[in-house]
Length: 210
Image (cartoon, rainbow, N blue to C red; front, side, top):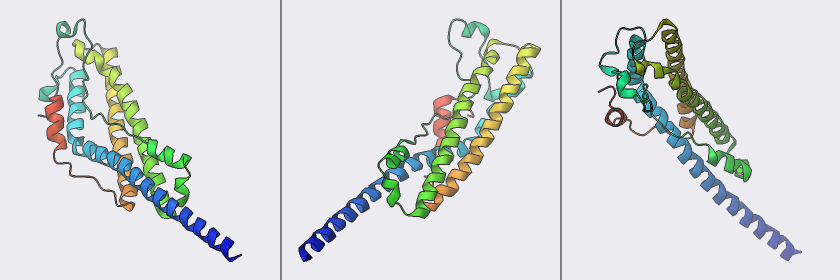
């Protein structure tokens, strides 16, 4: 009888150690993935004034007032026969959530501290929301293409202005969801890395807001 109890105790100890190790690895993986999105939101925040200035310049161009230094649409001849470039430059980042799905499938989440689990769940919900808005933003950029072909007619101008209003709404919504992500990630001890270089790197890569 004593031998059986000893064996059971040993088995329970081994299982506890297994889940302790598994949970620690799970949290490390989740935290790393959340950190990537937190840094991507920090980048968007650092670039927000640049994004707003682009939208203002594009709106001026759509109204026929010229885009100013932030926007110089190519001539129709220059764009003939090739794909029109991205007129509204925004960061391109992957908002990944694969680690959360994998952890749920492995039952590792059952062993995470309940309060931390809630924070992870809320953080990943914010990441999911941001990803959906980013996809909407990317799709909405296509409506700006007529700006690259010269002066717009009234109907085209109206469509472009509507698209710009939607894009500005997306920009604001990303900011709101980003603040939610910061709040939940902060409960996990996850904070953005320094964002000082984001604007300089973005300017160098895209040539806007210089």
